[in-house]
Image (tube, rainbow, N blue to C red; front, side, top):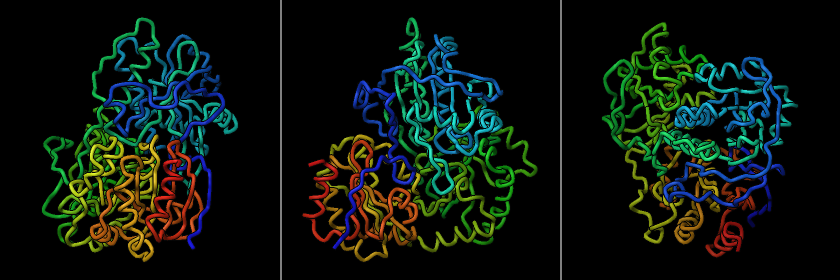
Length: 544
């Protein structure tokens, strides 16, 4: 008999997470998204903000210049307060870029808005760490990035409901961003999503909220739509500016292609210059060894200035032998499912992602190891990729809410890693989620897959279904999905990574997450009948 464990966990980890801000000091005045344009309500990667009430807890910490700073010092100004990992290469740079955008969008009125950050890295709390982050992101004199002793920081984290923990050596924290009134009261809470293209939209949201709180409601110099920006996937042809002049074409090509996404501020946490120069060796042998050519993509959407990349490249000891494209909008990074910096992506000639590698968390690859991984990914890839497309999604799922429609549009695809899954779960806040962990080599998984295909068609307009391909090769997984169509995508992970949420006993395993982000139930083992699966969906997903 399949085993079941009933659990009630506030999901705060990056493995299977939607981050909840908890804490008695935060009194919510609304339980759902704030009213606004329909485009904002239907954008799954942009948090519309949650209205708050009550006084913001005061704090007294040390900034990047070694000076003491307290929240009370900013009475009379609107404060935009973020909690950032001082060594972050994922969501924090998106948050701080949006903060700077917001202040610039207010023009002269931005002088009445203070940008504050509080360190959320328990292992990097020295003044030099917050100064290093501020420097590489071009924010040294644009904000105050505060730190203190670990007990001091923990008190502030608790006061603002910030969950901070270390998972497999990586820092995970609530990506919270508060707007505080000139009277020192909490106004709004935003949670940053892992979406590069939505950064200016978040900046506009912050600017408009700040304007609402300032005398005379000064105008916001931005009129961006809140509709979700279209991602540029590897299956789409696109021409990007090339560093030094000219253009670089990405997308379907005569053969596979290897990409390295980076930003100049990666140099805070690794020797970026050395890593990029070492990649010249790979490029030199690529043609002779019949390996995919390399293209670098600078994530211009989060660079501190237009001069950051040219100055960085000018400082290299050797010029790069491969082109460097600039993704100014963030739409390419989103489409290539970049979740960190630097980030390798290997794509097929038809534009399918075959392999990815997170340098920041897994470490730089030596040339020989890179070649080995690329060859392994190419050999594992099916000769003819036939993933299920959006056109194959049943008509019963037509007109689904936008966040669920986005899932259906990726039907049958194999997407990125655990961090990509975490970002998707955060974007689905407000919807119940059913996550099925499976593997192509798992016979019980194969037998129950048609049940999930049918259930996702029946419930897919109300419930978000996601798959997790576990301890499997990407080639085998893609082949399996081509033969077993479902109306939702799957992400790649491992049993050890999933166990950071709750210990699992094997495959298949199904997680039920409610609308607020709580894991209500874990079903271990195969579902033998559709009726049993439907009953669990009704009970744990829909609350029937």
